[in-house]
Length: 276
Image (cartoon, rainbow, N blue to C red; front, side, top):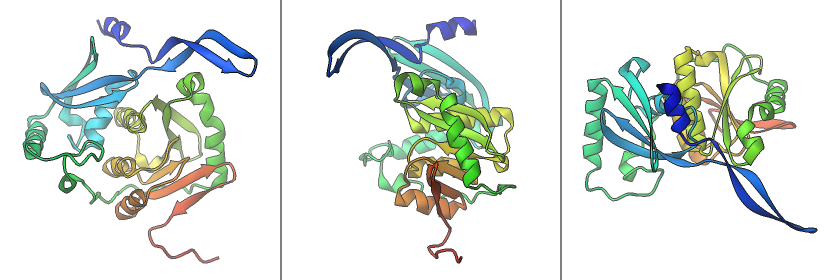
């Protein structure tokens, strides 16, 4: 039954006709493009959000989203997840605990009549959650430049969607030795991270035993998700925003950005430069 559902889902890759222009002329050929489709997340029969995502690993995505957005506090509050293809996209139905659903409905009622501010789907500035939880996990290892170099060198081998299309973000879980354990890709960086979180929770991964590595900038939403998931160490290839730095500092998350082969930048909990 589930195999039939998978066969009806859109493929993560689609072949399209292109005209490739170059100095020698125009070539009529085919190319692979990453699929982007609407994915509706439905909780106890009520649609909560529609995300534009790559239609792969959607059970992990739904579970990670429910946890990282604070809709449920524990995996045990998610009783069932069902992925259903539709003509216009994909619907993921989650059956959650009644207590979590009651909180979700109350939150939805608080949105009624508000004017949207346009910040990542939040309906008003007052609803932005800028007071993160303090993470309680603490890395039992030290991350250094050689470990990050090892991750950077190995990551392309885990990015099949990116190699084929050049337009996907990746979220990786890496162990204390800098070995890449699992990578998820998506056209949306938030979606890739939620897929990773869903897998981590289902696999019983301890956040203190490794780090989350993202092939994107460090935005406030990504750091906020890591705080909810008790992830104490987050690294990104690109730059952070000021709000991402402040959220990381408030949560006690060690944030590393500009992770490149020649080094990385760390944003400590204070603005005092380290003594050498």
